[in-house]
Image 1 (cartoon, rainbow, N blue to C red):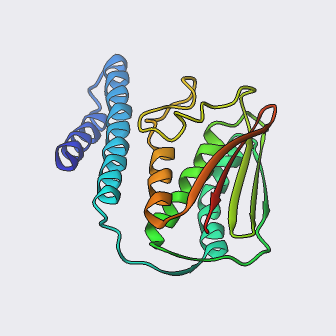
Image 2: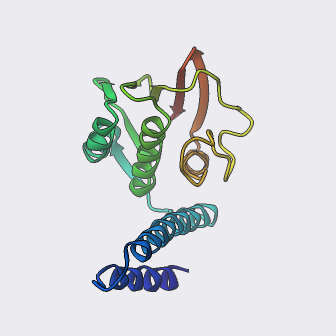
Amino acid sequence: MQTPLAVFQSQLDLLLQDTDLTESQVKVVQSLYTVSSRLRRLNKNLLLLAKIDNYQFKETQEIDFNQVLKTQLSYLKDLAEDYGITVLIDSKNPLHVTANKTLLESLINNLVVNAISHNKNNGSISIEVKDRTFLISNTGEKTPLDKDKVFRRFSRTSEKKKGNGLGLSITYQICKLHGWKIEYEYPDEGLHRFIVRFD
């Protein structure tokens, strides 16, 4: 699927450079470009899930969790700022885990992006590393998520938000592969929390 999708997107790129297109034609091409981008993300996520299911991430190493967290947050800082979201971090406690680094980066990225995407404008995200756990809480909708569905594939936590419903499922599979546990809590009204336990 990757090759035909790449060809499709490159052809759209060429079309967008055509100065003879009408305004309505440009809108159609831009719409197709958006759909193509979503298809590429979906394909990428499905391939990642397939690789996890087939145990293709066997290489592990001891990793400084806080260092990986710091790096991933530096990439996502602008996205949070675009929505006026305040990110509070308490990662003073050292944490080393044995993991596949690519999958650990994906886990952190998915949970942070989820906390941003399902937040409210001018909301907040709280990140804490303590007692061999990673906690991430975010303000959001004032109703709890369905604990039975939150980690299922294609189960979107909100119909109001765009996404393919695979981010939390991938996170769950990464935890399962490494022998970690992930939980969802709704401790206060409008506050959603995910906890990864590394023991």
